[in-house]
Amino acid sequence: MVTPELAGTPQSPYRAPDKANASPVAPLFPYRRRLLATCRGEISVEGPLPPERLAALQMDPGLKSFRPPERQKEALKEIASLPRGAVVAALVQETIVGYVTFHPPDEFERWARGGLQNLLELGAIEISPHWRRLGIASALLETAFADGALDDYIVISPEYYWHWDLEGTGLSIWQYRKVLQSIMGRVGLEPRPTDDPEISSHPANMLMVRLGPRVPREDVIRFEQLRYPERPIL
Ligand SMILES: CC(C)(COP(=O)(O)OP(=O)(O)OC[C@H]1O[C@@H](n2cnc3c(N)ncnc32)[C@H](O)[C@@H]1OP(=O)(O)O)[C@@H](O)C(=O)NCCC(=O)NCCS
Image (cartoon, rainbow, N blue to C red):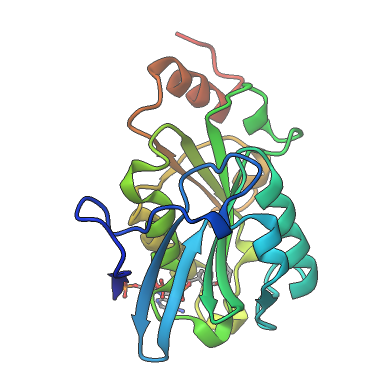
C-alpha cells in the first residue's frame, strides 16, 4: 500500500521539493516522495533524483536486467542530467532497489524524427528480484504520473521481449506481456499498433503509449504519423 508521507498537503500527498534534492537542470516534474509500506518494511519511492543524489546511493546487486549494476548507475546519472530526463527510484535506506526512467527518444529512433519536444520514452523500469511483487513498480509509476505531472507529454514505452526477465519470474512471454500491460495500464499506457520493424519483429513486443490529456491535437496527429510513417495522410 502506498501511504503519503506525513508532510503531504491536503491537496496532494506529495512533499514539496526540498533544497537537498534541487537539481541544476530544471526537473521534468516536481520532486515528490512517498512511503510504500510493505511486509519487508518501508520503501521510499522518490524522484526525480538529480545525478549527484544518485551518485551517493548504492545499487542493489540484483539490478542487472539491462547491464551490470554499476554501469546501470552511470546510465541513471546520465539520464538524470538530461533536459527532460528523469529517474524515480525506490530506496531502502541508501540503496536503490528499483527505478523507472524517462528521457527523450534517441535521435536515431523513428520517434525522434517528428521533432516532438513533448514526446518522452519510459526507457526502463526495473526492480531487483529480491524486492519484486511488493508493489514497487506500480508505486514508481504512480509517483511519476501523480498530479498530472506528465499530462503535457506523449509517453511511449517500446517493449521488447528480449529485455524481460522470463527466467527470473518463471512467466511465459505472454504472461509477462500481460503483467507489463497491466502495470503500465494503471497509469494510462495502452498498447498501440505500429509498423516499427523492431517492435513488429515479434508478436509479443509492443508499443505502450499514453497521450497526455494536455497534448495539443496537432502533436497527437504528428505522433500517429510516426507510428506508420509510410501511410498516406488523408
Ligand atoms: C516487471 C517488473 C518491473 C515488475 O515489478 P514488481 O515491483 O514486481 O511489480 P508490482 O509488485 O508492482 O506488481 C504489479 C502487478 O503485476 C503483477 N506481477 C508482477 N510480477 C509478477 C509475476 N512475476 N507474476 C505474476 N504477476 C506479477 C503483480 O501481481 C501486480 O498485480 P496486482 O496489482 O493485480 O496484484 C519486475 O519483474 C522487473 O523488474 N522485471 C525485469 C525488468 C523488466 O522486465 N522491465 C520491464 C521492461 S522495461
